[in-house]
Image (cartoon, rainbow, N blue to C red; front, side):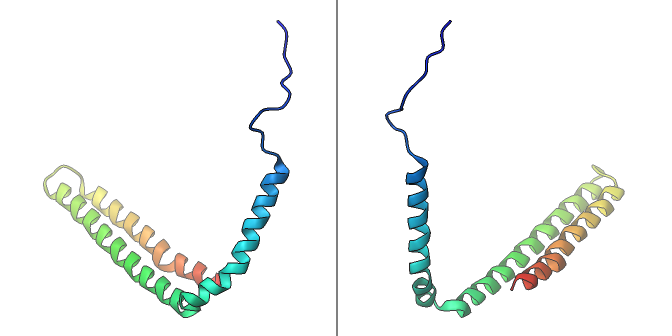
Length: 112
């Protein structure tokens, strides 16, 4: 059995072309970025958007947590699960809620 050396693929892209294209894309983004930020309302618009998203996220997670607890409570009420599982689920919901309610804002404030 002989090994054959392949020389040059027809659709070969050099790393220099990739680096040049990446450099051009970054340069274009830096050049256009500030104008787009000012056209979109600047920092005030971004802050308002982040606040709106945060309110929406907390509302959505609160409804999901209530639905999970009601589902587990209904299972316990119908004797399909033990009440200890409901207590465990309450602890899990509280732990996830504390991550979203305490840790996420702390990290957000650390970077802003």
